[in-house]
Structure formats: C-alpha cells, structure tokens
Amino acid sequence: MTQYSVGVDLGGTNITIALVDAKGNIKNKVKISTQIDKDAGFVIKTIIENIKLIIKDVSVKKLMGIGIGAAGQIDHENGVIQFSPNLHWRNVHIVKEIRSKFKLPVAIDNDANVACYGEFMFGAGQGANNVICVTLGTGVGGGIIIDRKIYRGVNGSAGEIGHITVESNGRRCNCGNRGCMEAYVGAPHIKERAIEKIKSGRHSIIVKLVNGSLNKITPKRLEEAALYRDKLALEIWQETGFYLGTGLASLINILNPEKIIIGGGVANAGKLIFDPLLKTIKERALPVSWQDTKIVRAKLGEDAGVIGAAMLVKYS
Ligand SMILES: [Zn+2]
Image 1 (tube, rainbow, N blue to C red):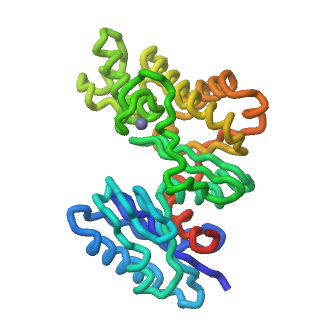
Image 2: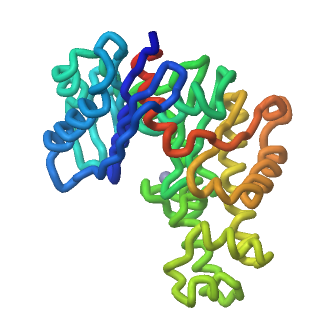
Image 3: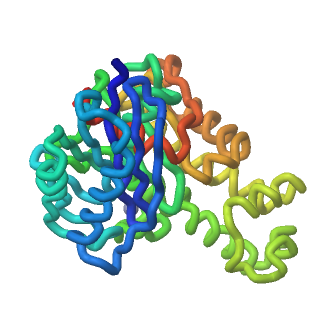
C-alpha cells in the first residue's frame, strides 16, 4: 500500500502544500499566496481547507500525517511558531489547530531545516549521513544534518550559517552585526557591492544592461555581464565565492561534513561562484577536514521545502 504524507511550506509570500509519497515523489501540489494582512487564524484556516482538497482522493488509512516548514523561530517539540518576522506572527499554536481538524500526527520545523531535510532524504544529499545546506537568496539560509538527524541546538536556532563573521569590521548585516557572510553573499548585498564599485568610477557593461538604472542590477544581470568577460562583474563573483568559501571553510573545519549542498537563486551563477568558492575552501580549511567533503548543487529546487516537511512526520 502506497503511503502518503502532506508537506506544508509556509512562507511570508507563498504557501505550498503537497501530497508526497514515502519515496519523496510529489503526487499533488497547490501554491497559494500567504495573505499576511489577515491574522494567523485566517491563514491557518486557508491551509486546512487546501490540505482537505489535496487529500480528498486518498483514504485516511494511507495518510501518515502532516509536516510543516515555517519561516521563523519554531518550538518544534510543542508545535509553536514562536516568532516569525516574515509572517508577523508570535506564539501561534499551529500544530494543535491543524491536528484537531485531521486527527493525524502533525510536526513542524524551521523552513531552512525542512528544506535541508528534503535535500538530504531525496535530493543532492542522498546516501550521506552528515550534510550542511546553504541556500543563497535574499538572505543566506542554512541547515545542518548530523548522523541523519536535523541538528537544532539548544533552542532550535542552529544553522544560521549566513551570520558567520567573514570580515571582522566589514559590511553591515541585517542582523545588526558587521561582516557577516550574508552581508556579502545575500542577493541585495551583491547588488550593493556592484553599485558601489560603479559609483566609485569603475566602468562596466552592466550599466548598459540595466539601461543606466543601477537599481535594476541583480545577480542574474551580473551573470550576463560576466559572459561578456566584464571585469567588474567577474570581480563581484570572485569576491562572492571568496566570502562564501571563507565562511564554509570554518564550518568544514568544525563539522567535517560529507556534503555541503548549495542551492537558491544566486547559486545559478554556477562556475562563477563555485570556482572561487572551492579555491578558497582548499586554501583556508585544513586538508584533512575538506579532503572527503563534496560541495554539490541542490537538486530539488523549490520542492525541497514541501518534500522535507512531509518527511518530518515519518522520520522525526
Ligand atoms: Zn548577520
């Protein structure tokens, strides 16, 4: 009998809900926008209605449970979203509410942990026991799997890889600190670094690519500029890979992972970021620490969240 569980990826912009089998295949999926102007009760009601829709053709006997990945600080033992800046929620007992409607096991964890768990189970991490995930987007998300289990730390906040210091008195980060990896590698910061160089008088084809409006610079545009061997764009990617590698070298020295899985939109730059990243890791981490570590691209894309969330039910 094929068994299924439901994965819910609850973010500040969208909610994705999927019916997933035990091998990580998505059988049915819906994506709706998160109406964050409404209260938590309304959003949870919408989630419940969509779960009902997605499981309507599956007999209850085949359903193992519901797993949720949510942005923010999560008390996974008690099923509470303690604080989510993206959702503007505080102390929302989401697991209790959803469980009362379905009488199935319901589990929750932080979205970055859940996405990492998805990659670990059915994506680029398959077969490994110790995995670190890094998601390069607006921010830099992280997840750590040790001995096949999500590592959460004392209060669930483990894996904040983006806030490793890579420059002791460096750029200001959103967290308030200076010199965090995210302050160099996060998409808005990549853009800012490019703008600063252009404003300092440097020439770049990127100015043409965005028709003079520097505000339209994106990592994607910087990839295009690099195709023209644009010096400034190549330098930006060189630095981005360097700072990412500097942070990851520390992690490799400490955790000696089997795999580091790198995903998110900024990772689409491919060799532009991976070449300097690998070079820096080899220069900065201890040889014994990095020699058996593989640096790989994430495989599941946006689906890592729902797949990992669904797997929380059976394996947590
Ligand atoms: Zn920071």
